[in-house]
Image 1 (cartoon, rainbow, N blue to C red):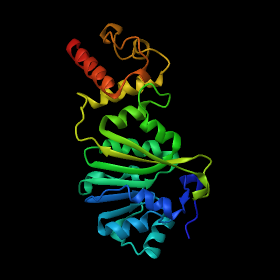
Image 2: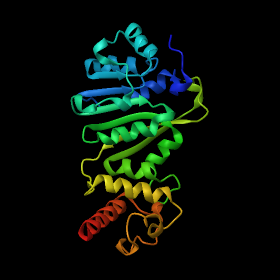
Image 3: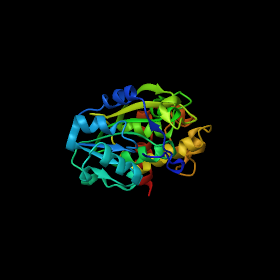
Image 4: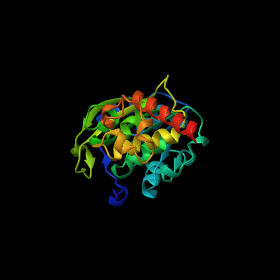
Length: 256
């Protein structure tokens, strides 16, 4: 039996109906990776449906042992590792990721996925409701922020349904939600992705300030396009941030 460990942020799903609904959102792929397999609520369904195409990742030795002994998953498909340390370029493309993401590292997991956005085509995950809302929020919404912009630059985001605490062992103190990311077929790539990320993070780190103030450490006020200079970051769409960062990057490069 796998005992939930607080330091790993483990809350094991025990509702079979919700497990089925989550796995049904997943599309077939050359590689499917389950993050945080736990006691196998999703794992058994995934292994039954996708067989050798599924790989199961969990940092917990008890969880890996449970999957091997109780679901008969071959050792070659089991990874006792921290997902944040895995090199996804070693897996066959396209990659689809599914899992009940630990609340304490959910944002880190999403940024990890963004590092491999050229390979990861779909993500189906359950995480803290507030994080899911941030991922799906559009400009003008109080939940709109760094994660919203960076995720939505490359993925279409679908907020599916809320999950209450009682379907977990132990019950978390917050509600959860299931969300799906699908790689956009057509998207605009920033001229310089690192600069784009810096602009987005810097703007939202001082979200109550207008851009001429929040970006003052990065660019001169007169370099910011007139239509953005007096706006706050939550007023800019993803396309606006792309346009702004590209414009500023070219101006900085031209003046250096």
